Image 1 (tube, rainbow, N blue to C red):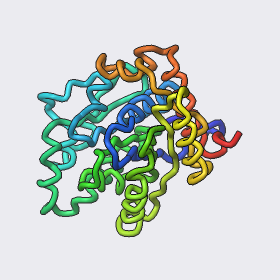
Image 2: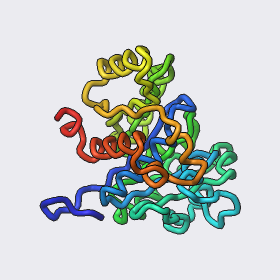
Image 3: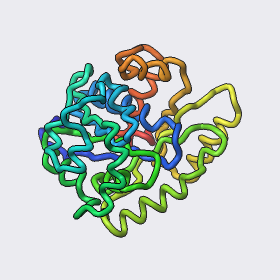
Length: 268
């Protein structure tokens, strides 16, 4: 783990990236924030908890035919370290999902201590990382509950489009539900405005509205909608590997600095 300026080792940060809506840049944010934190020198683990496995393939990991995946960690309590794979980015690792995870929602229903499977797995490897980012599915099933129960904070990407806040109220209620019943330390720590289109007044209006509601939880950096960000996953690369000088790479580097610096960095 990386030491701070005083030589102390700060507590690892476990962050669930969540949004009840699909298609809002959640996985894009997980992959690229993870890559940029790793570029800053932080050992970072991305946990792909979404059965679609997009965070895994977006980091160059083929998620078919895996000997050990997050399915085995959640359902068979395999050690998390057994499924961790290195990526093309130094300091960045991924625990891949497989299609089997789709059935885990049902298989978990009768399981003992079903909400704590991921938390126990992460606790066993926590000393190896500075950041653990959990890419949650876009629904409040038992996989997302596992993600929220294992995390200490929640990062929410919000797209700068019509209906942007749709589902956010439900997400906040669900976070509160998990906090009251399972994980009393859980907080929404960060909100990132993504898919920003500077050509529209609507995008500015959404950003203003989000800032009014959530204050310094909202990153100063807004992530633009760009073709390069959309293309990078099809090459199995993060944006900093695919096009290091692009607007998307610059934006996510700034987001990583804000996340690692906390609210003080956002209000400078």
